[in-house]
Length: 258
Ligand SMILES: C[S@@+](CC[C@H](N)C(=O)[O-])C[C@H]1O[C@@H](n2cnc3c(N)ncnc32)[C@H](O)[C@@H]1O
Image (cartoon, rainbow, N blue to C red):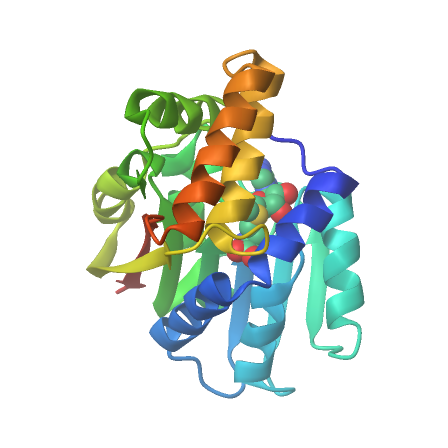
């Protein structure tokens, strides 16, 4: 289980401020096609980066409710959203959201479902919470599709597999359309959002993700200290020699409740 304590909350915030994820947010906002005055729910709102952008899109005649079950994440969101009183933030769990049926015009749910064992139930909840005609945007990643140039491909696969083992539903993109249709959604569409780096930098997306996966692998015992050091040294050398290439796709699903 991933515990979003203060350290992981701060680290996630750093990563989610990077240009790769700024672009992902812009695509998510665009896909929701929000109008002034709409009521929006952000499930697993984290540090409030998307929540704030949703609120700016609907303006003060609308409202945004952000829910998350991590207090450190909500503390960051509260700071970020303090100047927008039409944002409400609540400590709630995604599988039982205590809101009336048909409360929202739009729901955003980005990089949350992978942590949940009961994804189908949460998607049914989303359907219940949307008004007829309401729109949903979900972003998820499948780390089996990571492309990272390195000498030891089996080690790289093992590294990302160790990270996936720490989450409940790591392979969702291929299952989401079926979950959405089963829950009653229509007009399901999917788009890929590549997170692409051709340099190894500590402050780009892949640098952070490799560091995080190595830490998870070290903790679980799947990766030794020597393996981690050698892997990082190789990636730095590849980057210096213009032989570094990292890409993983995120998938943006949109659908409508008829
Ligand atoms: C990777 S962050 C994504 C944050 C945000 N959606 C974004 O894209 O910027 C995942 C978030 O899901 C939250 N989360 C995980 N399990 C949850 C649950 N069962 N109910 C509510 N939030 C949850 C975590 O606390 C964390 O803030």
